[in-house]
Figure (cartoon, one colour):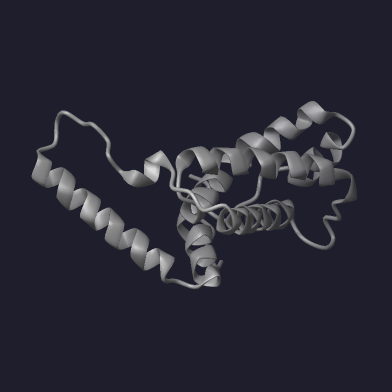
Length: 154
């Protein structure tokens, strides 16, 4: 199993190739997509929004490939920097346009659990979301990197 903070084998060559052969970017996308999606999902309110932001992150990354300098930072730093900025942009936009997503409402029909189990799960989820919401932006970012993107301090 790969080390959680590991980079893609041959990454620099793949990045260089992707600047002239756009289809080579697929290797970077395939490798980093699950980690980026998890990172973003830890920071936003729904899976649908996480998917939208994650696709925007990779679009921006493609646009920045030609200016990427591997001597300054690894590709993951570029990618997760874009991800952090995209999440920040989302939160800024959301604060200007207040709304509640259907997913956040939590009324999901599920035939198997009992009503008391659903209530307990929803209550626990709401407590967790409230606790996370009480964290600073930096603390939420660290949680997203640690548990969403599986980065370690090693």
